[in-house]
Image (cartoon, rainbow, N blue to C red):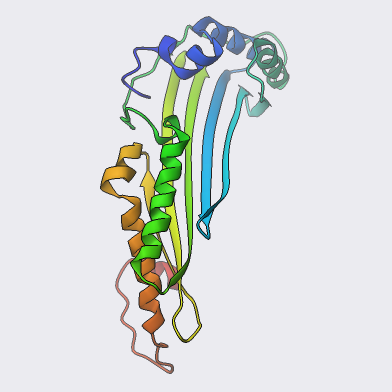
Length: 262
């Protein structure tokens, strides 16, 4: 949950869809109307972008949005669940009524007033990559393509992929807990192919990202860094030789080798 947000009224679902705290309480009451011990609502909205460059041409650039709400009701050992991709009040109530059908008889509990949970600023971004202009993200991909091709004349093909998404989450529970979160994510990947006189191409790959602002890609771990690393790997492998065959003495350290042998 982003601590820069003063409360639910300033959260994404409240501002974009007009969902109020009273609405959430009503949906939870609807979910418990047939009985049940517990109910919760899970809202999710994801805006995503992907860009790919191949042969110095933008082969694809897509943007999309997916959203929905899931309603869960627990009655003893039974669980009822329903969902809707439409966040209108009518559709959410309909999903709540369907989920409520797992329980029968008078309501066992009543939903309590919702209160904001404790706030933790896990991703303190001023502006997520998905909130910037598309041309800025396209330019990052172009920079990677140019840098990889300029590394060595042996590089004959470069592929660059940029992906980002911005996930908004809202959870409301019948025991009065209300949580919301803002989760940005972005990654830049570069693939380079090198070939010399032997005609056998070799590949290198590098990339990185995370829950970071676009300035991280522009100024810190730049497209040029990833591109040069991918190109370096590909060129270095052109002079690689086959590993010797036959029995060899192998020394394994603790950790992952034990997992692999197991």
